[in-house]
Image (cartoon, rainbow, N blue to C red; front, side, top):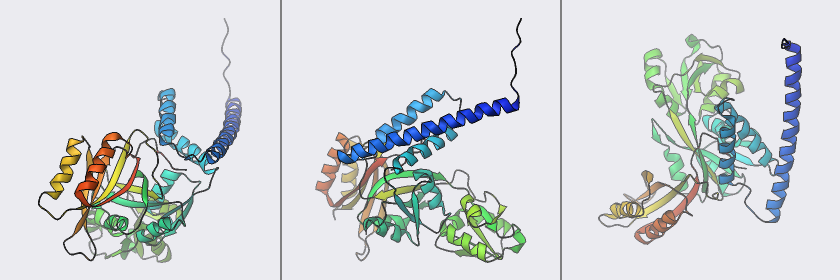
Length: 367
């Protein structure tokens, strides 16, 4: 009868070191393959990002994993690997509503990975302008919140700038009250963007009823103010705590759980179909009774799922509106293509804003 020899901690650590060395060698091989593919695509003038291929990679890996490695961590790891490999072909720049550590910045890191070059902007308008003028490859902007609704600055910017939507990302929002000392007694003013202030109004009313609030351009600006003034508290992201060396006063002060913000990736072109896509349009209606019903009838007859519709006033034209539509499907899908051709005929204004992969828990990222 033989007894199985048990390994001690040192021997197991040696195995881990060997595994880590092997992983590193495979990562180096993978980035080499990605660079070769990049050269071939450049030679053949092919798009570098293939959303369908990326979705297939994630599906295959998750199936092979069989739940052994934590799925959330697995997605995050391979999102960073895939993004870094593609960015080795060409470095990209991403404009976002700054300064550092805003929720938009956090969403950008989640989407593009840490290898991209992130460039903070003062306003959402500036993000659109940078992309339109091709000073950055992409931009990321918030478009709607599950509690407070649409971000009108973003919708209005689509009416002013010629860009295309390339993707979307959903970010669960958790608001933290932070300050330099970590003591709530030191806070004489609470600063943040208007949206987080609105999303935390009940908590603030209950716990800081006499403390005035100050709306600023972004949560990052609020965090900067808190870092520079011991009597200012900020409602900010977890990234802001690390970035500005702040102390957490109270974590998760949002009034409602499940608070999620949808962000859009903007660039100069939309990607090819992924199999699960969304198409966004900007429409102007004819000045006649039933004009909106005509649009809805086209979508119904073509069996197109309308995911969102929102109206915005046209600046300088009293009582005139444009409509933002989100439809499920890609512009290259037959029924979407037919529906859009019909909409062009019955609308006074038509603009295709883009077709792009729906947010996916796998964490798609552009290159």
